[in-house]
Length: 263
Image 1: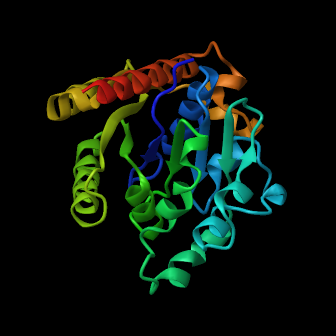
Image 2: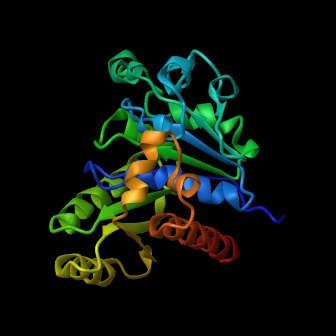
């Protein structure tokens, strides 16, 4: 099949509980399901993306810590998952000490960019799952990325948090990665019965226009259950509303990349 150019997409939001890791796991799975070679780099010390893809903690012999600390190359840290075409660099709690360990190194912001550069052609998409804060790990993810995908919960404080994140992206663009752009905003945990959620959708679309994906990710019990089984929702229950939404989101991501390439 015709492949897109290799792209690194950082999935980030400084606010926790917005569906960031759920989006990383299920978007990656959906992209893999349509034949894309996908890698997730788990940069969150909590390691939820790793757990959600069935990588047990005892099996994380090498991790994103080893990659970022410069102990091992990317090829040594990549693990296959149960999803064909989808691999992961798992995370461990060792990442918590990385910032202090490399804080005085001149290349501290570019560790991930350098680590991924040699193997970029091995994957069509690399998705980087960030911690819910703006720290050196998130800075590395944005410095390495072509674009940022922002999951945004449909709640009252959504726009306030989004403004802060967009300022962060501008800061990174000015300082370390001039080509960084916003891949898109994906609205998550949408409840059509909630008038406030409907208002948030309207406000975000008014504020950001075409940057907001058409797909809305609904609140869905099956999506919430899936990580406890070590599976993406798309494998756990393909027919549920959440899985179908992530498949639609993957199609939008692919379409946007094609449009970008053609422009």
